[in-house]
Length: 346
Image (cartoon, rainbow, N blue to C red; front, side, top):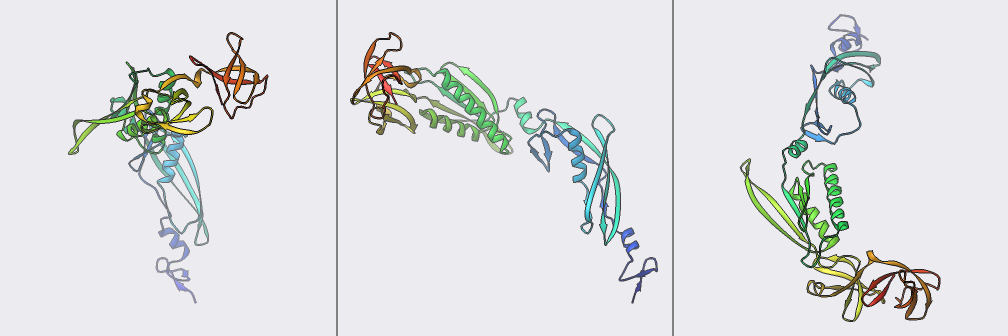
């Protein structure tokens, strides 16, 4: 038994007929306008109050996506398909003509609308702070009183700072940026956008090169009823550096790393690992560094000694043989020239 549609009087299974149901149902709701906010400097886009990382999409692609995202489609519309045509109407204005088709209560339907899209170009929080010379922390990398920083160490600190700032930014930290890297007497000043980045970088440099780390803070004002501080993190490099060959208590060691105030070393001839205290690191005799090693040809060998060819004078000389070096005559070994003669490295 069929009932009557209360709207048109036609036959209906229950309530409104299909025609009246379709006419009275808003399947597609479109906004009066859509605004897309893009950073004019880096190209990042602000979505729901948060800046997102820039990508390879063009402004037209972003305008099309924003128009599609702004639509409200009836939840009972089955298999909706969308067709979008975007046309430019000004320097920062577009018009998106959208058609949506699908099935509603078993009937094929199609609806369309027009969505004006405006592109708003501004500077994001990060770019605004960079342009305004904003910073929260300074990492000061300084030499030890007994030696200067090498060019390789300074370049490694620069690369580490760039890598960590980029990683923090891609993780969503808008303050993860480098304001400036300055060459100063005795080292580097790395000026950073956040205190958190400064602390992470200072610890990373210390873990790699050792040394002492000190932090100090300075009150520079108030914002939103809170005190604003800037931090300075000073890293004083140690006297020893990785690869140094040292003599300690009658044994030759190579510096292999750092752990806080301790210098990690490995015995050249036995392979035994140990550590030097901060006090011993300041007084131990430095014989050379692995970075200065040369290739030398083995002439002969016995259990404890290698006879090698001096790579500069081409004279034969003797050098103690490390237990793990098993080179045969004619092969090459890495050696360091020192005041005590040649030292063979593994």
